[in-house]
Each structure stands twice: as structure tokens, then as C-alpha cells.
Image 1 (tube, helix red, strand yellow):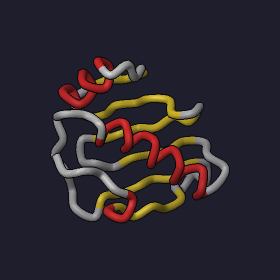
Image 2: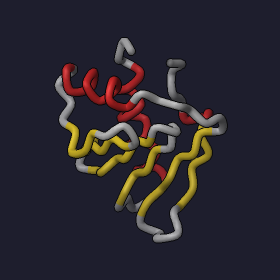
Image 3: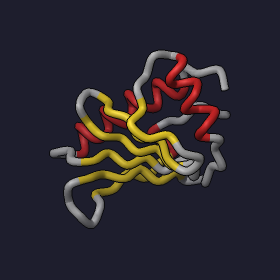
Image 4: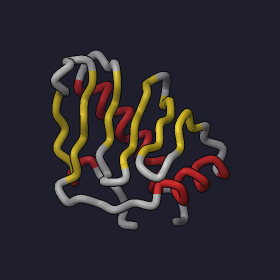
Length: 98
């Protein structure tokens, strides 16, 4: 899997105005069960792990990661906080050997 980077995504405020979504410029088809197992092995705690979505807390922010590569940061006050949560989460994923 190529490294995930913010510049490969389009970030925008969700319709709820409470969350930011990061949509990949190119859709991925990710094996989230494999990625989720590797994250747990690395000591990361997941709230949800299915073939379609992983959900984790990153610095107190709920981050949802979809098999398409889309990332949703929930209940964040601004774009900078959303970007920081995005970067922290993809740092976890990019550090994996999957």
C-alpha cells in the first residue's frame, strides 16, 4: 500500500458542520481487517473493526477509516484540528508493514 498523505486527499467540512471528511483523489480498495489487525498488534485500540470501516480515537478525536480510503474526523472545531487528527492516524497506518 502506498503511503497515505494529506496532499492525496480533498478535505472538506461535512454537511453536519461538526466533522471533516478527507476524500482520496484516487479510490483505494483497502483490506481493513488486515490493517486493523496490524494496528492492534502495534498497540492501537480500535472501537470498530469491520471489512468496511475502522474507528479509533486519536488524541480524543474519533476517526473513521473506510475501505475506499476516505477518512472522517468527527466533532472537531476546525480544519487545523481535523488535519492534525488525519496526520496522526495516517502516521499509524503508514508505519505498518501491510
